[in-house]
Image 1: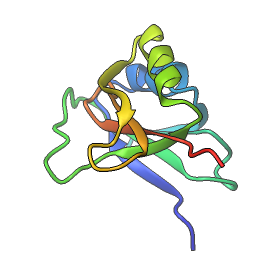
Image 2: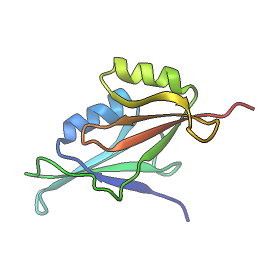
Image 3: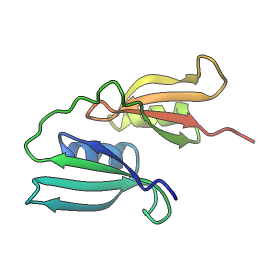
Image 4: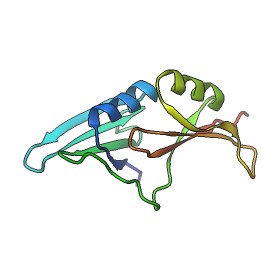
Length: 129
């Protein structure tokens, strides 16, 4: 068994695609419209779906806003350097909501950013050695 994807409902698919591809550097893996169901699915990730997990962005036509709710936590992405990643994300128009730094009760360097719908994404700095 393996994780295939995580699905997020997004209000503005083009804005979300711009964030995940332009700001986070993911690739659009596939996209399909479902006119009978009035929705579009777009899959993004860093590698092809046969090699790694993806994020499924679901856009239900006519829905302009979603609330992430209090059960959702975050998506985690490993980065080489969280400080540099935050600067690059800000330069590309992304929103950093917790600057890079050590965890409150640990030594791991983390940061948090938000996508256009307010979903949290944790950046975890790769441990050296």
